[in-house]
Image 1 (cartoon, one colour):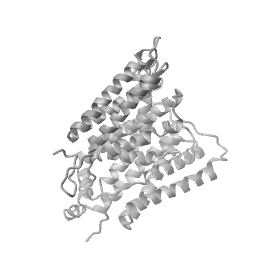
Image 2 (image 1 turned 60 degrees about the vertical axis):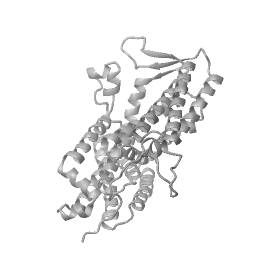
Image 3 (image 1 turned 90 degrees about the vertical axis):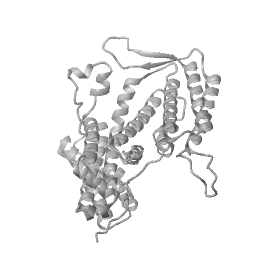
Image 4 (image 1 turned 135 degrees about the horizontal axis):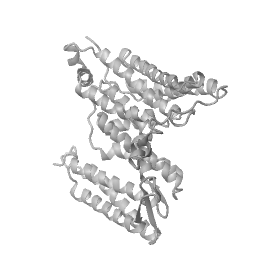
Length: 422
């Protein structure tokens, strides 16, 4: 039997499986693409997909006929949807088909937006990595917490507080590195509060995280009103690009994708394999995962459950603080209310996307960062779609990925459960 399907209480097999549901969605979308392309498209329209700015003009572009390309994409989407509806394949094949369909949808959207215009694909990849940075850091914070059994939906609040405190210290000390340190400590302090509430006082983890988020809105709003709006210092600068001025900066294509970033992007990319190694290849990681799966059994073999949870949650808050500093110190050089814009919650979606594994979560973060970058590209190209719908793209992708594309996920068994030592 298809592992995705379940038997109803009466013994009948449920018809609407995940494969059939998303297959039907692809079929409807394929019909919309084909009808729109044939009715509104121009046979002479060309889409230009740039491959970055090279040292010698003219820039390299891949030119595609818009209407035939969209027709092919619509037909492929229809075939994928039809196969999923009629065959309802197993979970692995379903994920491959749905992932291929999602890729076709993105490619079709890019080709349609670039009709009689040009989109730089290399710049799109670069922006995707840059915009994925806070999501990646928030995802790591979530993995570190939940692998030891503590649910942390307060990552958004930790990032917001860190962004405000880090910018304030950077402004008044006129030193961005001190601001970065303050942001890390602010995230760790908020995480300490969450750890006390959930581990020591056994408050419901969701309630505690919600309180952290509400508290962060008030604290950051007060900091902005009291210390930032009428400061005598102006605005601090931004972190410099790591490789600017070096030979690798001007390498065509690879230079743009690999070397044109600021420090926190590389920090996130280093932390992902580092956290994975600690969790899955060290005694500390083994103890952390044991506490997250069966704290009672871990306690009986001498593992200090409370210490493991406190250390992991506080360190996770420091990582979330790095993500908050990305907004105010590395991206815009100022602080606005609610400037984290729900990226902490999207980080939790990336964590679930990756099945509580840092490497899979990083892939999810890059996916959501790509949706963000695509959103900005579409607005620049003035795509004939209301900007409110374009702005919804990252959040829609989050819901589709978590609810359908990734299939079943398995959180740590003791996730969110309080522990009482006997």
